[in-house]
Length: 203
Image 1 (cartoon, one colour):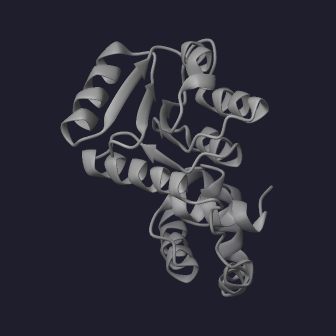
Image 2: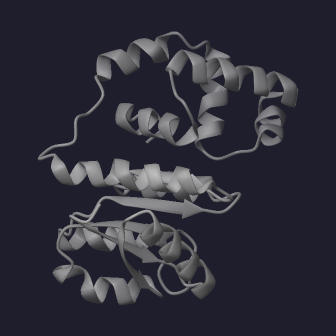
């Protein structure tokens, strides 16, 4: 953990202080930034680092920050934090290169593990991409209805909205979601999103 710095970007001071305390306590070296703009000002000289950024911030959002980093060629593995209802934005962040997204509220260990996964990219010259053929084979296991439900899930729609759009009950959507996660071998929503992005299914 002491071989890289975790940069926390959040416009809310209590959140910055809380995350900095948590991460420092478990052994990370941490720097905090009150805005995406202030982080970008120091980005060219940050060295070996990981980024933890909120999605919704005034001035420049977390998604815009990632695109700016891409434009400047600054490759920093990033974890984005999102509030309820921000899943579509989080998906956009992952398309912009984020390693993971975490929905609020979250357990401390979830963030710590996400940062470790992001940091593991620093030790690799190239990130291994899951076998597209294996993902395609899993996708073939889905029924047409399950594909429709997955499209809504990845788009960040709540079960009730998916149910309304497809003319089925919310309970049926829940069953389809469970089947989708099992067939795709996805442990959580971020992992399912990563799979669909890798396959370019919904781009």
